[in-house]
Length: 239
Image (tube, rainbow, N blue to C red; front, side, top):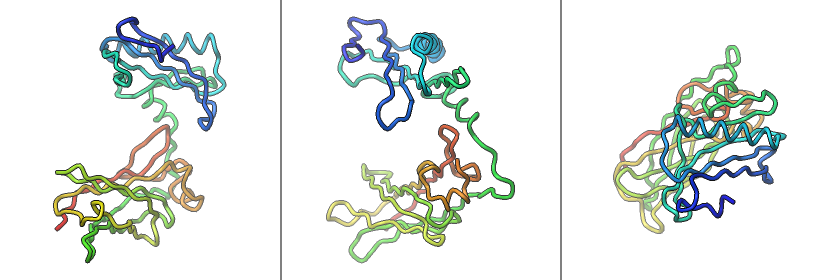
């Protein structure tokens, strides 16, 4: 059992986990090694064990396979091994019977922008301090009305970090007020972070603009499993 794994007793251990509630039909395969391996060796072993697992126990849905290293027997000390192309996992699809890295799968799932609907994301953000010393994020954007966003504020010279959920209202972004407990936010440089959830979680009116997988978005974005999402950061000084 993977839970009984110890670097003192095992060279490596394989765990093949059935789908859990809320994850669809996605299974997970984990390999944990008792030593540090180069990315090429880790991927080779991962592919061999993944092929063995899906041959013996054919899955209904996709299988995501991860490689870990654990040189310290202390529980929770494992570290993920990135693959040669910087992917975090392999994914096997029973429909195509193919194995792909995270990045290969991501590229294969991406759709081209709808003709004439490319949206070059534009964001203009500022920090506003209130009379009581609290601070909020204000912004203007060309993202569609009602698009849901996650707003973060991170201190560059402190451990301060706070988040707020919001939505674009008529081209404007307004966060809740941030503070340090009951104290005003101290002056300094802060990084404002703006990100969006998976397009599938956005309102239908928003998906009609950005695309069902965010394929129309261009600019400060990230991709995951074929979907595009906003990811934007900017530093601002706060007095």
